[in-house]
Image (cartoon, rainbow, N blue to C red; front, side, top):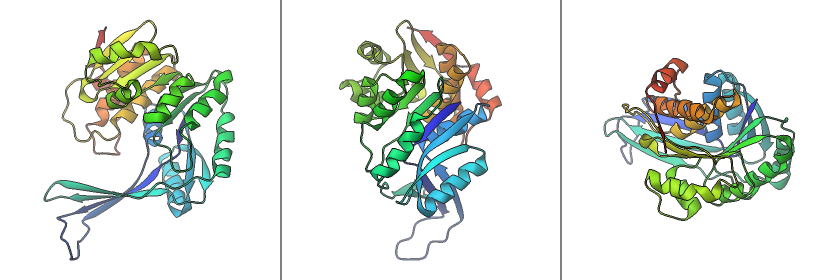
Length: 307
């Protein structure tokens, strides 16, 4: 089983209008409601590949009920704790005529200590030999030590923890010795406190961190990923595609990567599937994930370079 953890999901209302007119009525042409969050996107990809996953995290209020209901309707197994605060919402306005997009994002809910403690207890009960994906931002009331605390608490159960985070939460997670970290190139630069732009910059800076984690995977958008372990160094390059949306590509990468590792694939094969999933996701509108056939077609064109 692969457990994905989201502490800060959102309910997104996506509204299409012709053009935004101030001080007048704007007619909605189309409206969609979607659930978003990094760990949720990871869970969708794992499920699409045929894997078994359980989504854990926190939701609250009427928005939280809708989030949970929509996820269950998608077929995602959920074990979500409840908070008193309302799950955050995003309103996205698309202006079709001008081809502009505007995002209105509500503030994060605040998590009370007893609510966090209940989730922590559930996470500590995750069975031995599982995979756990910790990804996304932490809401108000949750310390930046939280991911590190989970890694430490699961250390004696051979649970493989994958962390996709930024800033201090990532830094503290690394010191707790996770199984794998997956920053993007900007997040990796903040971790090492250097200006990291090229493949060689990543390779030059991974060594000190490999004593704390088995694998480091740095995503670089259309340039693919640079990945390292104690004995391996790779640059995985995707084929060129017509990108519709880059939203969720990094999460699709994580989903493919952890799924492959969970079924016993080698590191390089897992990277190849992850890059194929991330690339295939860019061919669709935001929130839409690729078919397995689409992933396999792209996987055949992924280039593996040993560094």
